[in-house]
Length: 247
Image (cartoon, rainbow, N blue to C red):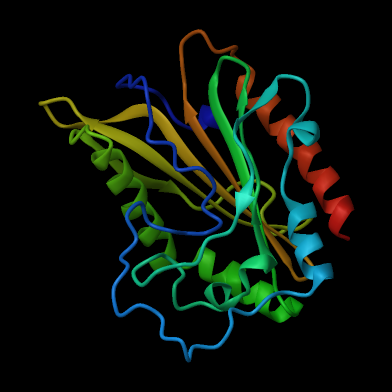
């Protein structure tokens, strides 16, 4: 989540905010096929302890502290549709009540947004499998394409998204299992250049619980030079609180 790893060349003023990728839905999921028949089985429901665990695992405004405010409220998870990233995974087969989407938080007036979501699997093996899926090249590319589509659908065809890096400090330690940073680019007419927007995706695991943390950023020259360090420290504090709730 270190924004100092990239340099802003082309300034943009707005992102199509992706929010947390816990549901892994594409911007416009493909919904096809016939409506459910009356003979379909009832949608499975997680046991109360699993539901409570999913709700406890997401980051809250209180977890991150003072400068953070709620930009979008927390919400229930939604089902994945054919074509969505992770549609064929064990994650997609979880009861919706075993997943929870936390609020999207904004840090003061800066355009730094943090969101999180949790998925609780029946066992640790299922959680590990989902972590590996999120780290796979196929999945990383699917998310990149979905993010790029969101930007173009928002009305600016000059924008594209590239995968910038998939490794970083601390991976494999203290439950930190996966990282990918996507960089926004813009076609200036003389070639594509990096822009001042990025999307970082972090994966954490505590036992059978997987926590996805998204950090969407539009950097600005007025941002304090140590803002990325401040945000990293605040997210670490928030994760410490979330981990304590689910252990």
